[in-house]
Image 1 (cartoon, helix red, strand yellow):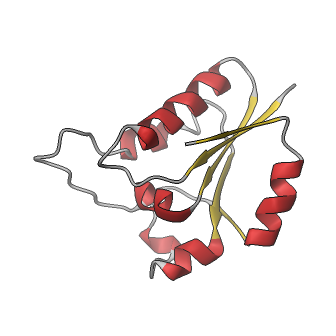
Image 2: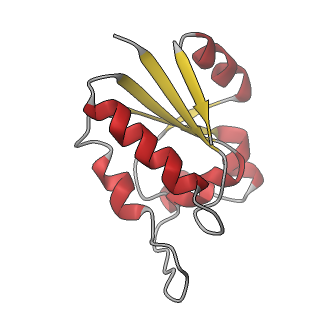
Length: 118
């Protein structure tokens, strides 16, 4: 089975990149591919609880994030340093994640067959 890692680096609003990353992860998982989702940089903002994007032309990513488990996406990863740099804690996040250091992320990526960056 192919190992696929989707990297999401963009905030949830302002472009379609964040939604495109989530869509790609859900589609690849629906084809029984071993899919992981890695949030880096401003992509971490997609995971914050209680977002209220009313008045914006984009939806809150929370519902799609809740669907990850249903699709069998067990590896939701987050850069520990990026989270702390933004003043966030795990309790601020809408779903459970696995925290990795930048060094651990490098090792993780070498174990993947395909990596897609959004």
